[in-house]
Image (tube, rainbow, N blue to C red; front, side):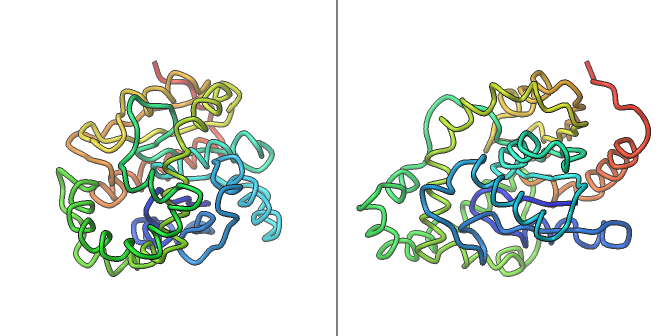
Length: 264
């Protein structure tokens, strides 16, 4: 199983949620998407889900991984979809957690737009990222987890300060600022994703709208099931960990043998 984290995070987020639940039965790869965590990137060239999928595809080849279920959370779900389109020979199944996969009405927070600017963005990130980050982190964590609470020591467990290094914050901002037009193009091809897919969303997710993204995937993918978790927000892999772990294990069994019918 290959795990791709969302925006403003790194590989430790999904490892914290799923490492212990799957490590006894599966080979696991937790990836820092390009520019996040401890990875590097070409700032603008590697901003699209497609380009990130190409980088991850090369990693899978380097590691001789020729069959994998790919699990993507939030923005990482768009990269998972791109990887499924790029490498249907390798990606045998797709799991989308609170996915951000379709264009949405409106824009993004102002500081992402500023940080993504070609020249001013660099100045902004090298001077204001840390103080703004320290100011916004408590509220931001609360918002992405609501209506639940974040796990104890979540900030430390996922090494969140990695995000506030200027280069990482800028890479994250470029990903977010450029995502909407990328998804407007990519979503036109989702009908070609013939792999079995599991879509998991919380009905109280206020970060990405389930009605646009999760229901959009169910509509567009030819072979997908949708699991809606009552009372869950944008981080269901932490707040509803047991349910999702069981659902992914059942999904893996279905992809390896039994037929997988589209859910109406």
